[in-house]
Length: 134
Image (cartoon, rainbow, N blue to C red):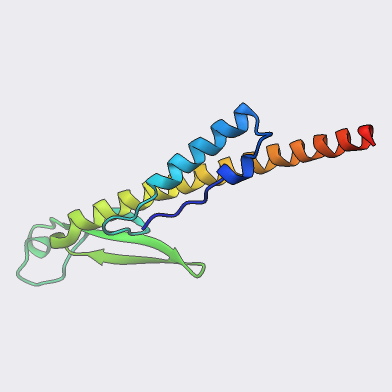
């Protein structure tokens, strides 16, 4: 799935070079926004604990097990979800993919704000020039 908004029509004939560059960069980033594969929000982290089985090494020798969990925040609360070893690699890739997409969205949001500021300033200059010629 790709999300993009074409700012080319916004530039018009009066677009400054800086604005054109920002819009080009923004459109390139938006074109790369693809959610191919699993996307998982959360932080993957190891959990060390004893399993509690009476015959296990963690009970006999005190050696604890390493398992994996993903922590995430939902509705103002933090949750931790156990991740089985057989899906650990897929979850790890999903969290990396989420982080990359979030970083790209943050950059696009910053570019959009900068584009809006420039367009606003250009609009103010145009209005000022129209008043002078009237």
